[in-house]
Amino acid sequence: MKETLTLGDRGKAVRAMNDGLRALGYEAGTGDRFTQSTARGLFSLQTDRGLEATGEGDSRTRSLLSLLVCNDPGEAFYGDADGDGQLTVKDVGAVLKSLLTGKVAPTVALDADGSGRVDVKDALYLMKCLTGRAAPRPNAPWIDPEAGVGEDALQAVAQALQSVSPLRRQLVEAALPFCYDPHGPQVAAFPKSLYIWGANLYGPDGDLYCPTSASVELLAARKPAFFSGGRREMMLSALQNAASLGAPLSGADCSGAIVGLWRRFGLVEGRFDAIANKLLHEPLSRPIQKADLLPGDLVGFDGHVGLYAGAGRVVEWAGGAYGCQLTRLTGRCCWSFTEKRLIRMQKDFEVFTRPFFFIDGEG
Image (cartoon, rainbow, N blue to C red; front, side):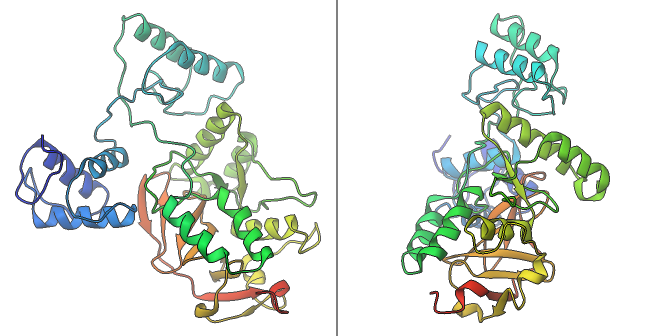
């Protein structure tokens, strides 16, 4: 097969690209022909995901497309818990550890037999695979759970932070590690910070808030509509994945993230709390023009707030399916961790404000 597929090419690989583009909501050709529609769809995909936008099916673009639509499992298998492309004794150990610790939320990484749950059968199936008595079952390719902000976005934001005050820079730098970049080249399985309704990122004592499976289940019982569409399952799997990596997974809602950051830097007292609309209006902030935004300012619309990071990017805890994302000020899109696709959000930011502690000469 050609390294790069171009206009006029035909074959199974072209058909897979067309099918994948269509599944992700992009323009696509029909059948196994590389048409102008295929090129336009690839160009849009490459633009959205931060690749060189050529409209051609190079190997990197095809690999990304396969990841997004699970079209080509490659060397990824059910039960490959550490994502190294091989089934080893370590994977068996990971399944057993999951069972012994009681964290058994469904997760592709541990579900060796593809049953949708993690149980003893998975460990037994893995042992059969290792001894040659069963064949590994391919699944969606391992997706990096640590994927965060892409290099292009980091460099752009870092450059914007060079010309602002230390406080503005510190606020943004403290928020960036929680972000997933929906336009970055890496694809992640889970958010780096969950959207948890009513939660503040940092508590009154300054401790990072990290939800538990029990707290998610309790909240899901109270607000079932909010956790529908696979969001509850995604969050539980994300928490299990974080536990297996030994890394806590934080959570907040949109206003709780801003409140938490302000608490962390001592800009408000520890017990301070506020909803999005309160944060966006006086006396907590005053309106400014979009063109006057600086890193650390707030953006939003009725009922929602985000932190402006500079370079046309916004840190926002966007909702149950999205978690914390580094979105764009114009043309706001989020990566859905339940639908596994980039979604153009219905609303763009229309309110731009400057927090009260920046008003007096804080540039």
